[in-house]
Amino acid sequence: MKKTLLCLFSVIGISSFAQEHFSGINTSRRGGLLNADINPAELANMSSKYDVNVFNFSGNFANNKVAFGDFIDGGDDFENILFSGNENVNMRVDVEILGPALAFQVNKWAFAISSSAKVQASLVDINTTLGNAVTNGGVDNITEVYNILASENQRAAGISWGEIGLSIARELYDSEEHKISAGITFNLLFPGTYANMGASRFEGTITNNFGDVSLTDASAEVNIAYSGSLAGDFSESDNFTEFFAGGLNGFSTDIGVNYRWKDKSNFTLTKNSNDEDDNENNTLTFQYSDPRNYKLNAGLAIRNMGSMTFKDDNNESVNYELDVPTGEFLDLNQFEDAESIQDVEDILLQSGYLTMDEAAKDFKVKLPTVFSAYADVKLYGKFYATGFVQQKLNENNDNDQITVQNIVSVTPRYSTNFFEVYAPLANNEISGFTAGLGVRLGGFFIGSGSGISMLLDSDSKQADLYFGFRFGI
Image: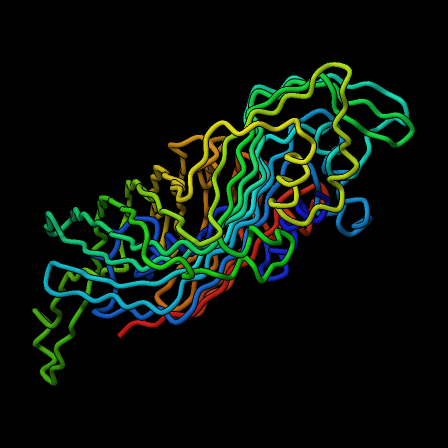
């Protein structure tokens, strides 16, 4: 089981770390496909007729127990730190790759086609005593009895999938000062691989007798589901890269609206004259509106409304009842070397304490539906500030749910048409406060939502990195 949980950090081998993907750059004045990723209505605000995405990458990690300094001081003690204390463990590893994409404008309309690949592994509300016993084959004291009562669903889950997005946006109202737009994206979903192990309404007693750890007087509702390569090994990072393996088997929708208060600029034309007496009407002043200039740019969106169906040959989704009677004992040490969800399932079934309730060959997994709102305000000259809120609309504890965090962030920025530097400041549901830094040069950008806090605060529990390149024509 130790290797099973360490899959979360095997994923880090193909990523870096973060929370809000592309934090700060996704509300850039430059506009385009990245902005449309959080609100499809932003396509109507593109600063060029065509926007081409070459490659964007964002890797995210956050948890509520292990600080960045712990990785430096004692990586071998990771599991002991993770399952210390009384607070339930919550952890996310999240990777998003935005591949080739094209957006273009036609009069008041804007259209886009995009591609992306996504990976996620998570621990949700894991009881520390239970997690320590199953993962490490031990608990704090060499002889002790621990009573556990956990009504929430404890989950260990991993998933990968691919998306192809078809977007359309349109100006609804456009005057000299104000502009309102709306947009929608239809995502074609390609499930890759999936694994979930959940235990809800857990009650039981864990005993530790000089390292022999066992469970007795226990009951729980257990869900075990898997599809594709994650069924066989949960600890190999390569098993998370089957983004489009399951074919087209799902759909989702993003919808959004955008309001823009334009900021007009003056353009002065001077008339050349050799007549010294002709000193009147030598200048003409025009007002024009650059789509990258505004006093306020604000939007509302609901994203990821949909689900996908896993249909691999090795599919399984089974609900079990776990019942270990008083006086009988389930040996927890035997889970320590389990490498897959199937290994855990086999051990439980062989114990005789697991009874099948219901089973399904194919199963659906819901995307993490979120409501988001943002406002980018011009403060003075080239200085702006963005407020962003993300609120999840589903519960992370559900066995068929991809997880997501609630986020509130403020991003001050200095922005010209070619250069931009910004510092996202955020409060994240799991990892708490983070501070980052990012920079854009033309179409290239690189940044982090937590780079500053990670470097300055050894107790920071989040780290991230993103970068990419796109260009306009």
